[in-house]
Image (cartoon, one colour):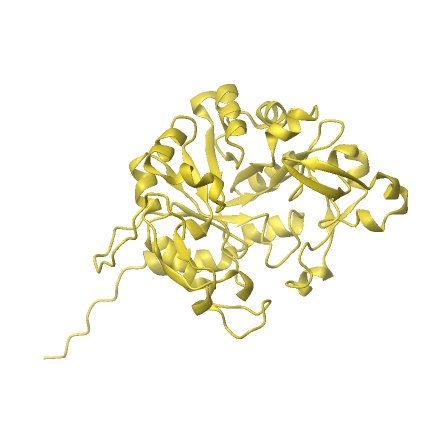
Length: 337
């Protein structure tokens, strides 16, 4: 459990008035189709998502494309393409040494020749039946607008990108500006601050917060107040709200949601997924990591704690649980006189 100055919330039987939290389809509907594919984004809209969430990286010629990370071999078929075999190399990316094929070594035209594939075939074998083209950020925004929903785009390591000559925040600011249906977010606080400087207060910005110890100061009351000077919301790991021990057993809930609201910040945690591998021990069903557990209960608990949105691979579950919590209570049954 992280020691951050936040206290465990005691239980309460009082029913809190409901708001209408948004359902954010994580990389589309990633539980059902490969991440960042047109089919996945369109399915997320069909399942009721209010926004779709692409990850943004930059090609060698400055195009904004959507991939989970700058290394391409896990989410595309690049490793099977002999014409690109010579581009495999090792480099440092935001402090980590990685080996593979990197998006900044490819032009947009070259990336267009790749096929997007399932990143976790061992957990989602059904998704291996589907592939898709690599999309640009502009195309994802177009898909969302055609369905009447929004976009919540994550910039992947924008400060590192700028250090290798690809100014991501500048490119994103120029492409989407302060469009009211586009939210911009990143784990990179410097990148989010730069977006605020470029776009001003009209932009809707979110500071993502992982569950590593190094960023614990961000979720203290002082840290949240600091975030509120440049962003309107936070996207914390769900583990900072639903606390687990090393065995995966849920041990309590924090008051992060309430603290963030006091600082004037919205809260939309990531990532709710239905597979056992991602659920606390008491919500797993069976021993197969790829088996489906009770993600509905996890989603319902987050919603009941007052989050303003949920980032999820299973939009249909979040839509269902949101509707259930918003439904009026049944009137008591009275005996006939």
